[in-house]
Image (cartoon, rainbow, N blue to C red; front, top):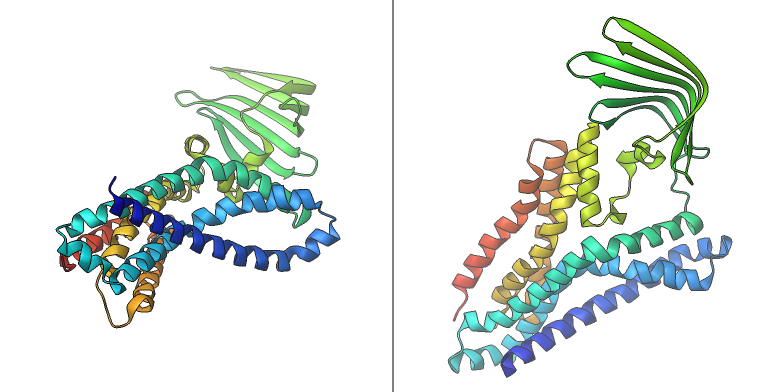
Length: 359
């Protein structure tokens, strides 16, 4: 690593950390002013506010704004170098523009990998702690109940529930059907009530009728109570509102697989989230290259003009991401293509901007 590389990387990282740090201070100040009444009313301990809420709040917002502030940091650093004629001095000493671009790309890749790790492995468990704190001291996020549940719990088993209470973990008018796709229905279990035990993970069925169908004969059994294990838990009933922020990359993939098996109607939304977790960090590298290309030319407007252009391009990228993902979740656009369209378009933009940059 050359002296020039170290100089650029240090300035880049310092500007990025400074921008993110200032933003976090502003966000935390506004958040405290908004939630201070809730903290006082519900007597939230100070240690929990700091360590359970804000310590887990910070990684989420760092990752949320990282591509934007990577871009702003690049624009600020390169623009200052252009204004101080440092770039001209570098180029006239035989260093090519592509070589000048390398330390920015390396730093962008490092930040992209860090963002991927944050988003997929560090932030989900942190979000679980933060959301649990919010549910306890800020809001009651748990729904009271749900009606008319139809769910596939295994390749040949289907559950029907008339109503379920999250408060008592009780399901009323429970039905479990086992279907052989060649012969049809071969078993049907009906119960007036089914209750889930969160400690043992078992379901207790009461007033149970077990109907077994064998070719041309049927057998009907009655049980006052049955304890059994089913491939479902109460949180599965609220799948549409399940917070994906608490699932890491592997848990999300497993959850998508399970929802596909159950025939859920939110598969596109889940696939968009999976691809977004990969594409979002990759955008950091693209925006880094665009930032260098946009701000490397010395202009009359100076740093302010470059930062203005940079922010405009960042918001254009975010807007395009929102539009394309909307088409995926509500239309026929494949989720992978929808999420990667902004990266593809801005990669082409980055290529032409670098090509047109004075060297």
